[in-house]
Length: 114
Image 1 (cartoon, rainbow, N blue to C red):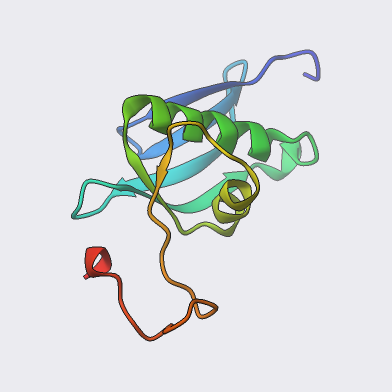
Image 2 (spheres, rainbow, N blue to C red):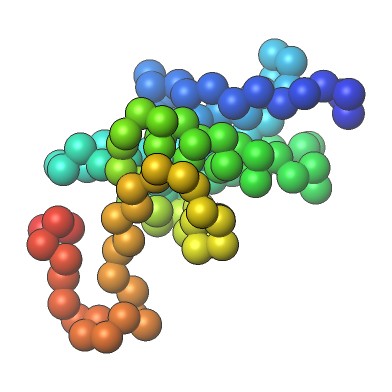
């Protein structure tokens, strides 16, 4: 299976982007639409049978590029997606960061999160 090129598809019915190797779903990153029409990404998972191949990075990179191309906004919650977006510029991607404890005034709530 190492010669198979992974493909990433958006599966709106399941609310996730999936990475496929041939007919096998090797992993996914979930999303749901919040009250403001933004895509919240809470979880990413790669099947342990496919670990160590860089599929998580490929999956998130292609998912974020697709979201940017669609003109949608991402709310990263999943630690893998957060780490990816903090270290990678995705041209045209609108990111709505949630406040963290490290932010000044960490007890404030973003109006968009109410």
